[in-house]
Image (cartoon, rainbow, N blue to C red; front, side, top):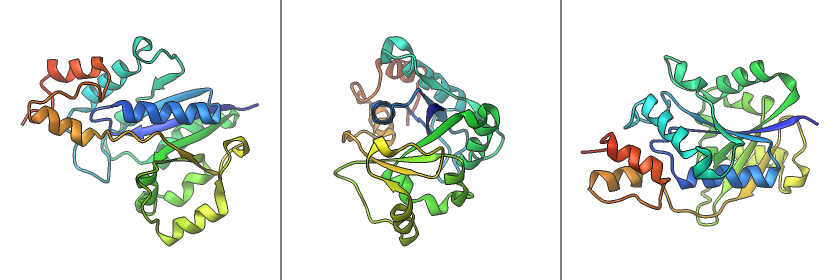
Length: 216
């Protein structure tokens, strides 16, 4: 049986419990063998991050320390940080496929809002030829999708994780525990001199304080 590898990309500016919980729930529901968090270097659809690439990588590593998560199957993959141009998911998947070969099934995890913006992604139509998509749905946030994605869901969606057994090409929709945590809100709290404690791992919070991140 092929190894099942989950991928969660993001700016992680900073990483928080919403990211970690989403990755964990996807891993458990799909029986993934490994999860990788992939920090973006220069996300093409938003402004520059508030922390440097190295600082964001440091924070992800701190969050994934076995002492914080209790797990050793969640790792960081820093391949996007070596690029000198915007990060494109399709190129990251191609890089992973080149490195890992066909013996690994890739599951790219993304939120419902990110999925709704998929038609604006670089070479987005090629994603399902490289991986399966895992879409995390929150009961309190399921906005309307473009028609092209409604058609894609009708053709590719798998509602039962037990049926998620294709090497690529499936869309698996999973219900996610609603956690109203965002990196934007955390940055705003820090800028206002308020504590972000209990929204992110203590080691990440300490790193933000020590390095004076997100100050006005």
